[in-house]
Length: 279
Image 1 (tube, rainbow, N blue to C red):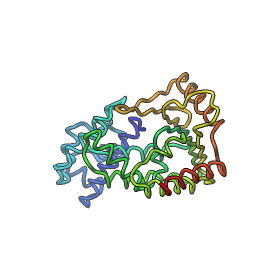
Image 2 (cartoon, rainbow, N blue to C red; image 1 turned 60 degrees about the vertical axis):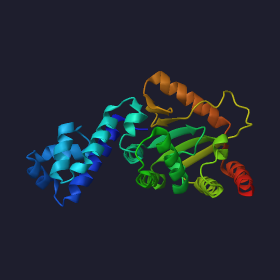
Image 3 (cartoon, rainbow, N blue to C red; image 1 turned 90 degrees about the vertical axis):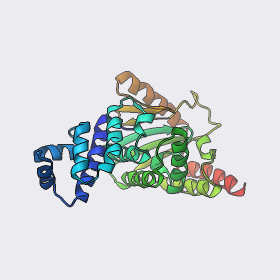
Image 4 (cartoon, rainbow, N blue to C red; image 1 turned 135 degrees about the vertical axis):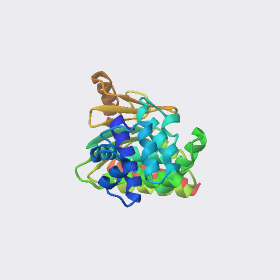
């Protein structure tokens, strides 16, 4: 769920990490490269997109030529809009998760709807680990599961920043889709219950048997009422036109009207948890 700006910022953050490992400040690293200090600053902040040659020089100057393939894969992710997962995952899941961290830090209000999975923002580490392992096998991408899990957990820090609001709907069917073991699922459902009542979270469960004005549709996210992101099996799509925003907003609003919240949601999740635990 990223845009070109956040992808560049995440790449810049990775360049900053590599530079910091040398023990050099930006000025000293720029001198070693033979660049202006301002260029190093722009690349590290994500204000400027590096060229492949820039990345090669950066890796070599840092004494880490082994990182060039990773950096080039991250650059392809920046350049791939709409973003095909084959390109985004060329360096593994961790770079994608890093971009999500940047995206959520730039977001004040998000509205999401998921039909088949617990959103990454609410996942436990164990649940996330199983999902990321499965997806790496499906996409035949590099296995960097633990780094990706750690990044996904870092993303969740935004839930504890009071100026933000995450309004998320989950179709009840997603709570039955077993990811990992029964313990993984019960722990994940406990996590959802724990989120109910947080000032930054408006969690709604759309019941299977609710009388709904439309069918459940596919998942999507609306960021700051400006951009819609839809993930398919092979591609991440983004829409920022007024008509598209209005359409997805209407769908979210209609689903929201029939969602169970607070105590009702707790009871619904509790029944599913009990059924899983007893199976």
